[in-house]
Image (cartoon, rainbow, N blue to C red; front, side, top):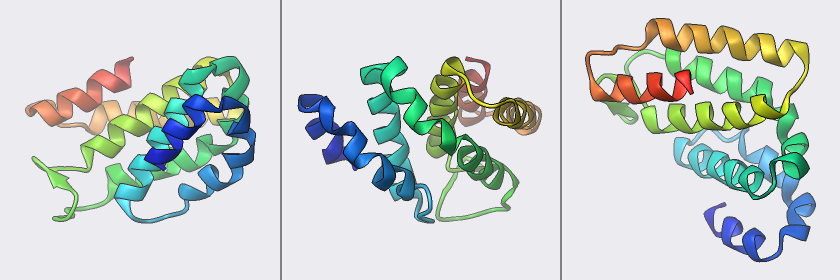
Length: 140
């Protein structure tokens, strides 16, 4: 996925060819794959938000579900950083939701994003830097 960013920077006309495969990455359960797939989507949207954000608006419910799972899951030693479950993935999901939210979406998607942002803001532990970084992205 990260290699695809470099390819698509040089040939942005091929983005539409990769959209279905990129969206399919969100179905993977491995956090490393999810992280790189979300970074790929974020990079593509940053190329030209008006052109490419509509291609990915449909993934908002999946992103909200992923973030909700990260917040509600108990202790996971494989993904734990200072008591938070994979804060790197949480921050990337929040950045992508911000980009997609700026473009717009359905009312249901907007409501789901508002709900998850409220949940993240109210349940994040601010006594550690990890929690502060998640809250910072949540407020953005």
